[in-house]
Length: 130
Image 1: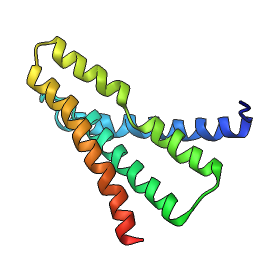
Image 2: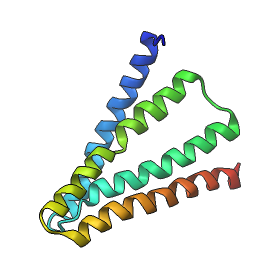
Image 3: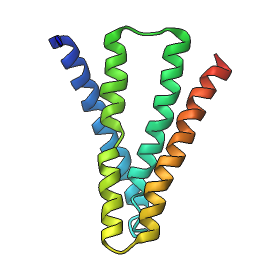
Image 4: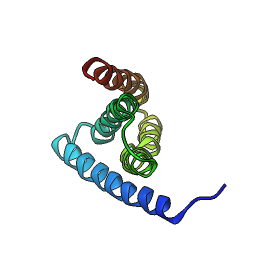
């Protein structure tokens, strides 16, 4: 498999934007709910990321839009850096570890089920509108 330098740079630039956006949005949300004990920033970022990937996958597919580099930038870079599955699993683990079984289940189950729903909503919205 051969990977060219331009594609690596495109993914890296997108990853920087996605990860930076994740940090800013998550920190902002967490600052609004500091004592809740629930990882609301990570939860919101993951649900938003699920919606965006569904929406953009459908949009790019319906419109057959964008070069390979643009798709790599958006999907692998920006959205890959933005979504926080590893952080989500760590947050769930820490909730379980601290004895917060219901919050842990709400976090793990909610992000998976609501995430799937929002991927479908994003995809369906583009199919409906375009």
